[in-house]
Length: 207
Image (cartoon, rainbow, N blue to C red; front, side, top):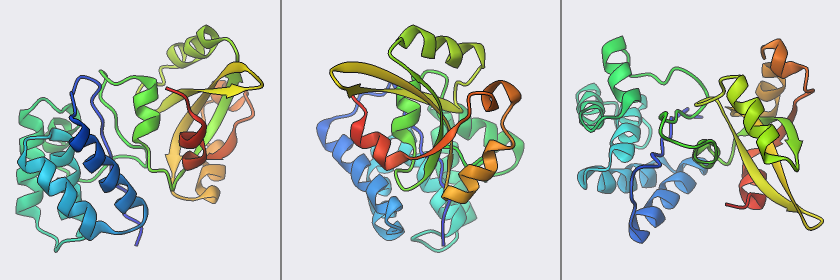
């Protein structure tokens, strides 16, 4: 069963090397459908006060992924994340729902466009909107279309040049990504978006 979890990274959080390794392990486990391992890793980080882990752990308990469904624990970890200033957790509590609101992993306003892309499930797919050697042009598209929290861009090297590509959304299958193209705003659809595997992007992206 595919569990649509929101993975959140905060650019203002300082992670130790160990915590970063744990985060990668949790993401890899989720991508492989090994939710038991994901729960174990997120639990350890959540106990240390990591709001990212607390938020994701609340969703695992809500969905029953790797654990038995437990709405009390789900609400507990959601409230802990909200108390630490995680806007998404606070919004979900006030909306009376613990369910993620979209297929796209949520990112706080403090996070960068690169953080958004790094947060996405590598097993999923995204829509590449545009690419250019001009970073300012890509950033202009990103800002003028109000894509914060819904899109990101990355840098790669091609024939000795830096290229910047703007991507939008995250979808669990190629078909869902293709179907999403028809639902894009006209200003984004005009760029003739095409489907990309997120893992392939992670492999070539240069930070």
